[in-house]
Length: 184
Image (cartoon, rainbow, N blue to C red; front, side):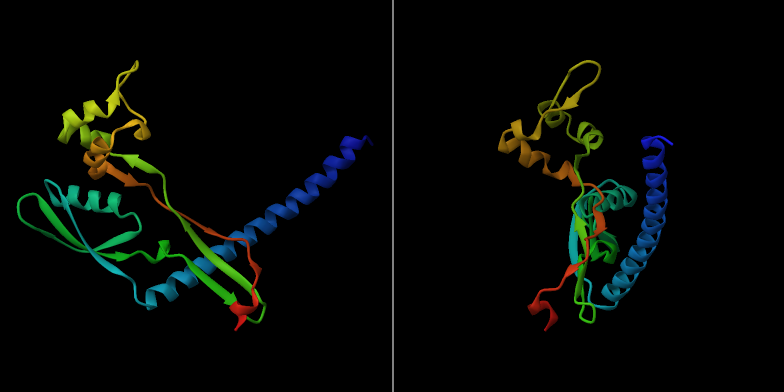
């Protein structure tokens, strides 16, 4: 038997063990997130008021979701003109949480990272073609956004209504040993 045969046989066994352990860890991670979300929901979730300009309720809901990816629309109503108003409540799925298991002396953390930043360039082109022209350029084959860092502050300010954050990422940090003050 060659060295590669021996090493790959051991690697296959280790890989199988790692994969089954990974499945079990992921299942328990999901159960931890469910328990955390349940506990957060039973607490007081933050609420906030927000408004957007939109031609109809469906568009308004879409804009609220894009501008507030970690919040849920609790109430929505039509204001004056094209203004829509909403009460938003935190989505427990996107609330960071730390739990110290004092019996184990271990800290478990649900971490939430911001999503990527996007620009709603289709809406921008439709609603404000002049601004769209100012913040894009035309390489072949189609128009593209300029680098945001190269735009002057006045254009960035005008563009703010079209910038939104993508869906945040939720992950379980590696459990760590609790510090003395965390165990008190």
